[in-house]
Image 1 (cartoon, rainbow, N blue to C red):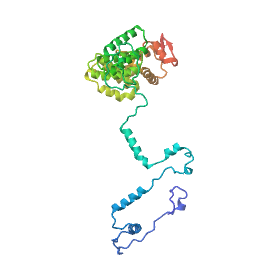
Image 2: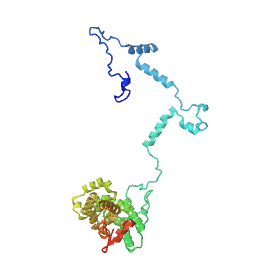
Image 3: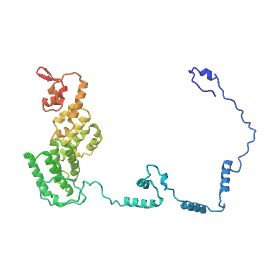
Image 4: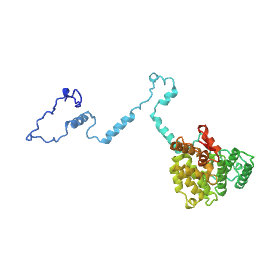
Length: 386
């Protein structure tokens, strides 16, 4: 058949005739007799069977079990092959003279059962010790503390707990009161107070104390962390408070920290939207009726709707330490608002006092510092425009 070319090709009429019809083959007459299939197997089946019977040395009446047993004896008597030959002249150049590599790449069938048993024993009975010391205490039983010191540095537990280094609950109550007095008097900085508070939390943990006093300790440490913008310690405290409130219901400050937990989820933007919605759905009826929790839910709704006017209005009215929690992502929210504002009103002068009040600043000086040197300030009718 000549090659096919599209009709637009210049060689179409040259290489292909205008009409091509396949040759007509004569049909087989209907009266021709077709013999039935032979009763014996075809040659491609019969020939290999006959050759195999002629090549076999065992009689036909020998059972299949005897044949398999004979083959098994022959395979067992055969010497297993070695991966590395015993003659050094056939060893590769990188293995020659290196007995360690030679043993590593050698293969011995007789050692496989022993290696399997050794490996099985190692996995069934893990008696080895970890290479890195574990930061958690070895003993899981509660410990009764005997230490009487009000102050004790925090350190990670890498061995069995010594009761002489753990303070009992009544000493921990005195220690908490002592630390708060030191903080109010300004005698200690935040890093020292944080170290002491972590030590109190550790003593509570190893003694399995999870009562109202534990709630007070974690709430106090969370407030100190918010006051000093230590959001890492605040996150640890509010995470533990969630389980402590479940074990100790009807705590006086529970609604306050439930609101903090919802506001803290806004730090990752829309990536934590599903987690935040799940937390809101799990709130009880009592928690949803709390004014603190209602305010937090309204702020979350305004944030996800990009309603910046309502968001900053709620920010100025945030109860307790809500402003400190929102401060974690407040600058990023303000930048997003300014980008949207400049795109909507390009090259439009705006009153600096109005903008400062809108974005939740305490005064215009903070707003000017936030805007930086990129903002152009204008004076018109005793007003500063930007």
